[in-house]
Image 1 (cartoon, rainbow, N blue to C red):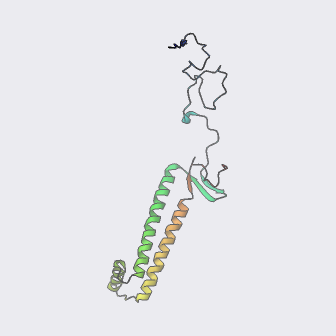
Image 2 (image 1 turned 180 degrees about the vertical axis):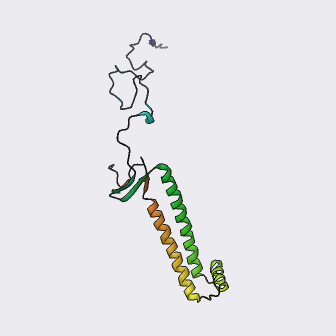
Image 3 (image 1 turned 120 degrees about the vertical axis):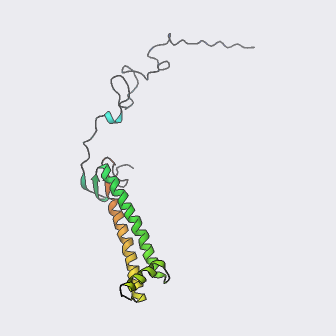
Length: 170
């Protein structure tokens, strides 16, 4: 039977500069290269909010970039614009398709309601004219929703950075 004797090293006998026994991550007199992290005089990490800004704050207002015109606004306004532009776009898209459906189906509930409403005020519409008007109104509604959405996507909050196609990465 072979007995292996291991010499155990005591932490008190070790070199205090040895990384093997250090738990504090080192100090300013370490021979290791700097890690690139922001630390204060005690070696603790500095929170992101307390760091010095590397660049000046981004100005608000319209900017011209390679991807088109962008409008930089405060975050609260950005959220409002995105919510309402998306809501308007969805409602007008769905409404446009309902109008096109009413134009193509002669027994549509919406078409019957419009015909009854027009007869109630004394107008008897020709079925072909009503089809054309409902179809054009549906297409106009879809185009309007698309336009609202596209203009809503031009807004950008401060500090959001640039879109991927404008970035210098790659």
